[in-house]
Image (cartoon, rainbow, N blue to C red; front, side, top):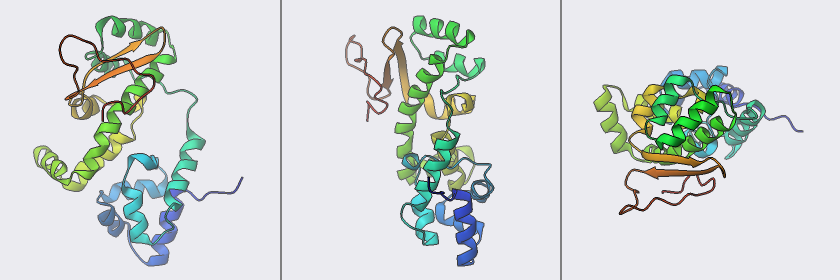
Amino acid sequence: MAHVTSVGQLLKRRLKETNRSPEQLAEAAQVPTEYILKLMDGTQRPPLPGRTDVYEKMTRFLGLGRTDLATGASAERAAAAPESPAAPGAAVRRLLFAFCEPTTAEELERRAKRGKVEVGDFMQRLLDVTQGSVHRLLHDPVALRIAANQRGTTFEEARHRVLVFLDATPDSLTADDIDEFMRPYVTLWDVDLETGVLRVVLRGHEPRGRGRAPLTRRAPRMAS
């Protein structure tokens, strides 16, 4: 298999070739400089190409090939991908189960305590749904500036928060992630434990009347 240059290596090499600094690249990508430095030294996992806009911005600024960064990121992530996503810790599970069907939540908690791997898979799919909705914030600078003002941070830091959440996994989720990104988007979620079918009701997509939203098979962007 052909060797694929990592995202960090590409950024280092091209910054040197163009005589530009990480600070200039961060400004072009609209992220804090720390984010670029971590990508370059490998302590920040390169984001999933379909869940970020930084590759397009960095590609234009550095004059890279159109798919160079995305190809490198995909190869790095594939090499490091776990066989099955791990479930979050007990404290984060409790927060997620607060808006899950109670009976399902109780059974999932029992399974999580027994180390059942399907719990991590269910929560990864729930996270996929939420990340699909939150991704739209990257294209809404007004909402990001409002969020930055509310948090007392910069626009770049607000974007960084979104980018970090979009790359979160079940075992890396924090209480802040749930409060800031999951509760505002998810009204209710449930899993048919016999079939593995996931049901997620997003805010603004609640079914009318008393009928339940239909169960869907692995459709992480069912409510767009």
